Length: 612
Image 1 (cartoon, rainbow, N blue to C red):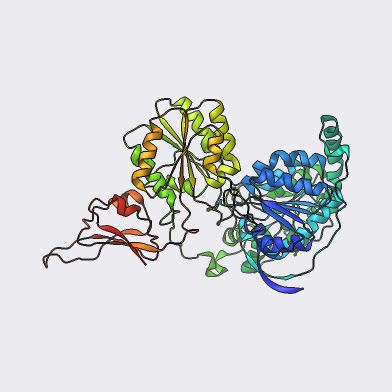
Image 2: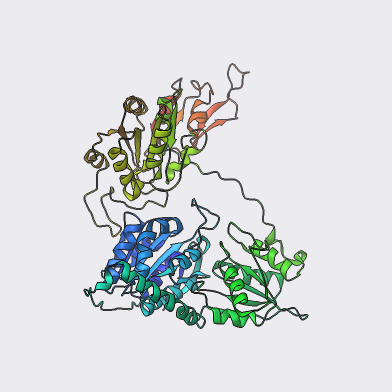
């Protein structure tokens, strides 16, 4: 054992490896991404790890290995669970042989997601056990327990870290030893083939099994009752779980208070025996959790079932927030009111200074800016609709580009565009998709467009990386997560195989890019443009642009139309004829990549690219 400073996601990875995982799959998505990246970095030769093409594929690959007795790990974020839900719902019925843990990192806030889904609710829906760690230390230990429970009950198990836990750091007493197992291998058995009659029997078995798991969870080491009941004859209690438990402990310390606490680490199946013991000790309970009232509803149900007159306060009674993430500050305020503490005694950390506003923006030199700008210039004055998608290019919705009219989920930009083109036949409808999303969920939409003879312009923004989640590989890169070289899949060739002859152009060649858009817009049917240029985090800049102050007329066109963070209008003075003052455009050399787009659009030729 050794003490190591680990991120929460790193702790999950190390815990999984210590538990004997031999196959790990997933699809990158903040806040889950670092789990597989850590496994890829520290694994031994007996561990296989991959970035799958999407979450559905990841789950199915892992399931196959689990059928053969391997311990498997699947990682994704909460919206990725939607993609994986088809195989997961059936796998809940079929079961597994080797332990299988599906890590779904929730994003309360949401900080980098399009939804605030609560995977604990999905656990009840899918009838699968779920673990909800409260800290990186707990996650390290709990992931090993999850594998044991998975094998004990022959079921996939869900594991739910949240953003704050995934990205927190802690000193963890971690082992370098691995639980080495010899998988039995795949044994042919009719149970691996799902049929209605078998599903009926499996459903019945699940309904009998889950109460037994709940009873088992009542003695699970991370489900606890702790603290004291409040003084002065009041029997107050707090029920909490996940990272909200950590906030609760800190808030009580700030308030100098104590209270009876029910900590739920396994929200489903609910540990009713443990919770009933807690309810015997209290008259009023405040439930602190993110996001859905999962623990709250279970306690209300249990009070009715056991005929207990305990008052349950929480989201349903508006004593706690009903959306967004908790924090030490919000929990302290709620506990101060619940425990009748004086907030005036709380230290000043409850009133932190306001942080500066940092609106999301495309990076300086991002090729997506050039692609959007080319389409915008080509379609100026014409009726057009721009159907967007999930990725860095979603940021094209912001001013001054204003080039994303819709954004629903990964791959939906392509199919939304097809519906829009039917509803708005007099408009030119564009569907934007990134290279990673094209492989993950875009290709079926393209096939649908060709098959059903839709009228749309597909624009593939190929920057040679999965950029938004930190630069992960995908099938078009030419290497796997294990750094093995593979032939890259060619997007233009794939489109050609679908019956579309795409125009391939460098978006930073503004004139050529605009011409390609004009040509495509003038045609009908399904046509495609592939804008190819690597992400600035892949192809590092070799120079930056400069401004000739004598030529700059401070028209602001480059700033006003591009919105590049490296461009600004200087408020300093430039002396002309010893009396006039002139504002001019300046370029932040620490940000500029020398992409040259601003130089191509400058009306006076005042901007020029220079080498380092």
